[in-house]
Amino acid sequence: MTEKVSQSSNPAVEVLRAWSANAIEEVIEFRGETTVVVPRKVLLSVAERCRQDEKLQFNLMTDARCVDCFPLEPRFELQYNLVLIPMKNKLRLRVKVSGNDAVVDSLVPVWPGANWLEREIFDLMGIRFNGHPDLRRILLPDDWEGYPLRKDYPVEGYRDIPAIATRYTRSRP
Image (cartoon, rainbow, N blue to C red):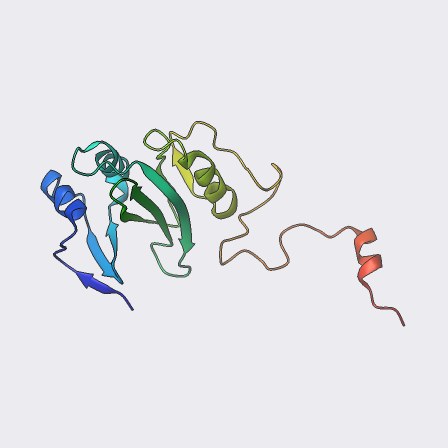
């Protein structure tokens, strides 16, 4: 269960609110962690503000991940964990993405370390990142069909199993 609050004592939230009233949809405080839900249209500008504002200066993005909320809509939630290393401050940015239009702006221009993380999300979940310098599969072969971490992906996969493989998996009489 999460605590949803309209006002937060987190200085990063206050700076973002002062910068733009439309930058924050929701603030979630839970067990000492702050999550800021931002609209998809302003994700890149909020990330740039978190990185470059003299009061914030989050200099490390430790992780990017995607959650599939199928069958709910918006289907996907992208989460970015940010850290201000000298002060040990943490902030999580969350953006909700529709299953029909699974596209967001890439954060590689802000944090170059997002490169491989976004490629992994693209490869396994099918989210496309506008402005990504090298958006291609990173774990699966280029001819792979579908996105295996989506909840509606078939357990058996889309590929046919070659006849030679079934010969070794049959039980012996």
